[in-house]
Length: 194
Image (cartoon, rainbow, N blue to C red):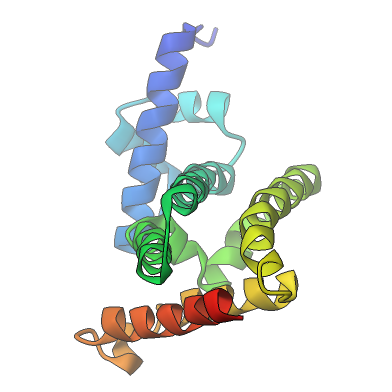
């Protein structure tokens, strides 16, 4: 008979699994992250894993959601306090930094994203899309509305900058942060100047 976990034990196990999932995705990528290694690192029996997640991909998706929410919260709070071009640039660069130092960076790679999303139930994906659109729209609408810019175009511009940060080897490790900051500053200046 499976062990019954208290709410506190459940939260602790989920936290450990997500922590190890993030580390393994950064170290090995999605394909090479296995349930066996996840449970070993989290210190739980393999059967226990399936009490919490139906698949590795669902855990990876859940882990990414936490970082996504962290980015959204960082941007929302930062934008409330930002009072000029450089302050907004700093907020956006901070969000990019969170993304680049978490499993989100790995999941932005098309192959990894497709591997994970292909195993996620459609109702879970749809809920994510709606929440994501709602959160992102509020932030971007605020910026776009000030200058009569299309929300879709502004969102696309930020997405292009974010995906550009994945090409450190092409741009050059030593200049990627400065180059990204330059692009972000240019976009933010357009927002402020109209």
